[in-house]
View 1 (tube, rainbow, N blue to C red):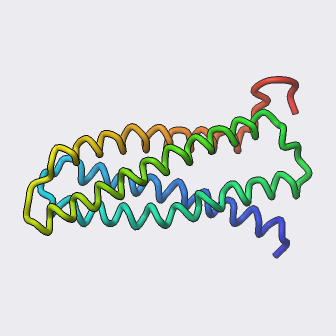
View 2 (cartoon, rainbow, N blue to C red; view 1 turned 30 degrees about the horizontal axis):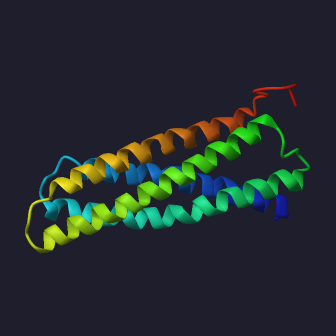
View 3 (cartoon, one colour; view 1 turned 90 degrees about the vertical axis):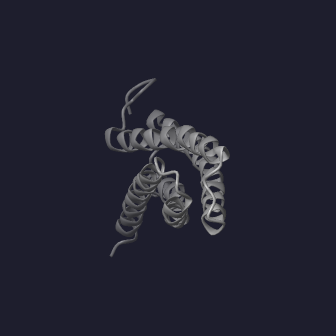
Length: 160
């Protein structure tokens, strides 16, 4: 396999892992959200945490392979769609890292309550709202980045 094909393959697969893992993680959290019983919430939150670690690898691989592709193909790093992608990816990564911290606290809190056979405290709902405010916009930005990669619009300045 040619190196450029391998690079494209890794970029596309890591993109699919990032998208699919993020969507799965969000669905796990949504499934657990309405339950007040920590014994039901704890295993789902723990599973979501495991998925988050898996997608973190893709979050790291994506910019590495993307920037390598741009350089290898001889494209300009200053193309408007790339500049927009870099910015949106940076914002997404920050949102998801903060959401990941909230998610980790959610899982720990739910597990502690499940172990103690105690109800979820109000802090759980507060953390869940914080997670929602951070995670969902990041997911929408990720979809926007995919559109930018596929359409490669001129956005501003002269068309490329």
